[in-house]
Length: 130
Image (tube, rainbow, N blue to C red):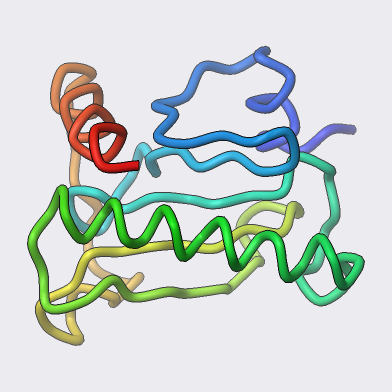
């Protein structure tokens, strides 16, 4: 069965897209820790990050860096934190999170509940800098 991320790539499930290439996709986390929390994925479904082919792995991180730079401009912060956990969805992905303090990366905190309008506006803020 295809992962939820593969279904997003296939267009079966909508997302708040911020960047895309033929191999990679970046979209907002709909349950973000902070505004601008973005997920970066390879379009090819691979469960574990370290199982990606080397060129795809390196390409994913190059793409993630470009997205992170856009996030930093869209959501001024001390830096963009990165997390790779991989337990919640069996599809390799990177969390990019604008942070000002360590607590901004605490995945045990309650997630933000944003409206469609807030998510759309957040995505547009990032898109303008990508």
